[in-house]
Image (cartoon, rainbow, N blue to C red):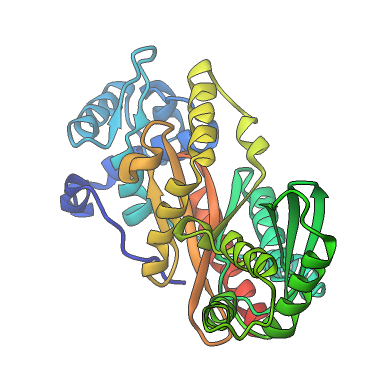
Length: 363
């Protein structure tokens, strides 16, 4: 498994494991692991009891003060215990954490669940299943970012909804369906919608949306369409509605947001989750963030303020790219949740799920 390079804060990148002696490392590890398990600060008395070495609470407090000076831990104002800082979490993930491997049971469960969706021949069904699977396994929110314009088309349909509105349905060969609402002229005859449907279906099958759009626009401009002006307008409006610009080229799938409401420790936690929900609603920013993971092979981890988007909610993102049949990266999938995610367990899950999805798309 590959962990992609990330944009480390300068202080974290300069800190080395050699700067911590054995007892400092062990105390720091226990503080982080306690936080990941409970979300609570841990004090010197409790640490002295659980350490695999004999140290007095006073000695533990001295080490905690040294760790605080290095920027790895801090004391919340309500407690004498310590919590890891975001820099401390990053240092732990990069330098101390043992990334576990998945059990054979976990691998088979992931393969069965994702492959089961693959039997529908729908890429979207596979991706929805993958995001739901990661959400369930991580108890956080599962996310998938996928391209929309590279699928090959199968069928189009214009359906009148109201006198001035029609539904435009686009079906891809892999079963993905896109719906758009289109404004139409009052009094537009149903025959014009049928003619527009027939014209497009004769020319889009097996083409990508980008290719079909280029070809049909050329025919319309050169007067080769053999359609009346009104029907030409409907065809052009339908094409425009599917390819609505840069923002529309990406599809964001989020599953399991309700998991983020479980196990909240304080009102502050609830506020952070509310901010994260707000962030997830800001689709463009999430798409930009996940898009950064497409520039590197392997699992990528963003912790807290390392990404501007989640700096307020104090959230972490673990994502990996997946590939199509030609080996080209076509999207990313992973998990978004609180900074106390179970990194050691989730990293291999995200990595393996990305591999399973890539294998299905290649098949």
